[in-house]
Length: 528
Image 1 (cartoon, one colour):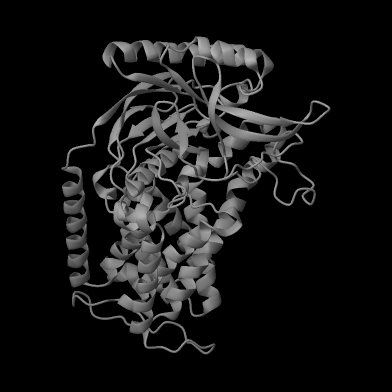
Image 2 (spheres, rainbow, N blue to C red):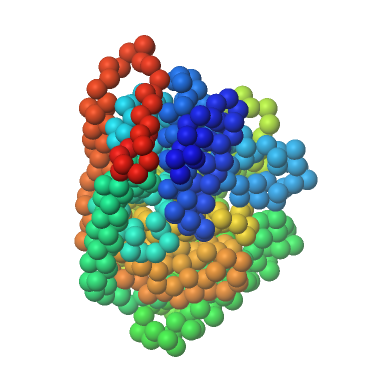
């Protein structure tokens, strides 16, 4: 171990950057679906040792950047699949997209790297790295419309028990705790013992929180339909009627089964994001056919595109929408996606970028933001279309809904880690807000969680069918639901302050590189 520590500390030049890249890529293995959480006990201590040997702020920044680049290349590799759906047009972009995106995302890791390099070796440096990492997560979730994908706290979403702390400190708080725990091997035996005690404490808290009775189920059965339609076939003219018929038939089968296994409950059929090949708000015939497929007390919540039209019959604006349709074929409620995907649903700096990545000449328009959408005979729902569900603390508006509904089209990402990562974020939102969450995904994974993040039902990736789910009542608002991101933000600031107070080094342009603090092996004290 001591030899490895000395070797990492002594690396310089391209070897240090290559090691940082590899350690960052290894850290991504802790993400869904692998959940190899113990790799963090190697990757983050390795990063700290490389920073110790950096010698200057510039070198520390490059080491941090390389670590972040590796982390995001490995964690976001699946984005390439979305480009392969149009390989004949964007083939040249296939080898560039993920490395370039990850290179940009890696910039955020410069923040914790430089801050940690400036801190005193030992526990102050560990605290500063942890606080800086979460500070960077906050910035990443906000800057340039935000992309808080794969927050480090997501590594605990493999089950309900490890994520119960998110009800108090949110996913960012779990990230903070994760980095601190990952660094304990470098801080001596007492720190490691404290880390184990902390894990046991959180496990006990999770077990206690899950030991209570689940809120009573409402007289509703959700029919989550998963059409399993490949993205490249989705909008072909000859495929539209067969796709529409598939969703109608699966919904009918699900409603019939719900009547058998859960008599007396109201069937609510849910289609994924843009599942309907026809614009249901404008196509009265498609809406009539959809309504005729419903039982007398049924309701259809369908993902569809909604349009606003000019005098010439051309669309002036399109919306990625959810509509509620009853047996009378009327739209009783609708929601327009508010957090759009840059380059996927609209082009930033329109007119300045000569290459248009998305097809068509009309960008999607943004809706008003998180709402509690009233539904006839149901608790109000908080609709979250696609990646709107990844924004911790930003999924509920001024009025608290009774449940959350995430409809998504993960067909873009094929059989990859992407849909698993997306599902994990949905579980965390349920725990944070204390609200049950249902999820209908085009190709999977469709699932539902109760208000404590316990998996109630799911349909696997790449399967065609439907899954029935009860709809539990909402739990009382969690501390995180009441105070939101203020809780992890305060914890992050306090962690940074503790690290800086322990540093006893003035912040100035003449700050020297880290002071070596190697000690004899086995003395139980810090070796960083």
